[in-house]
Image (cartoon, rainbow, N blue to C red; front, top):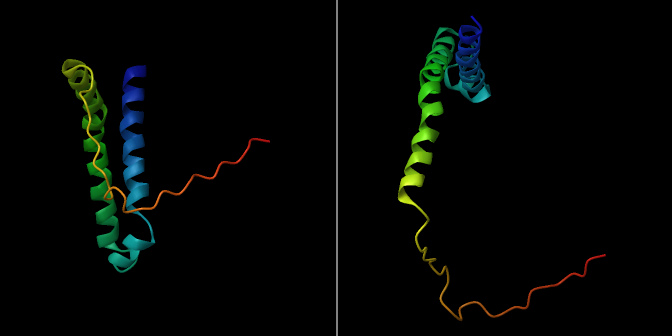
Length: 98
């Protein structure tokens, strides 16, 4: 019984997040104030949040497995943002600790 309560709570929390995040002044203005279209939009966003909660929970498992299989990170090359010598060398300001 406790499993079903916790599972329902988990889905409900994602649904509540979808409902809360789909509201707001920007969406009210987009749909012309609170009306049927606005409530429908929020309902669709709530259902989408509930449906996406399982993939959201499972995806990190694949990321951890993939990073374990690939092993240690390989060498990483940084790309210079400016040409060498384009910016004059300015000494960094050093502030003594109190």
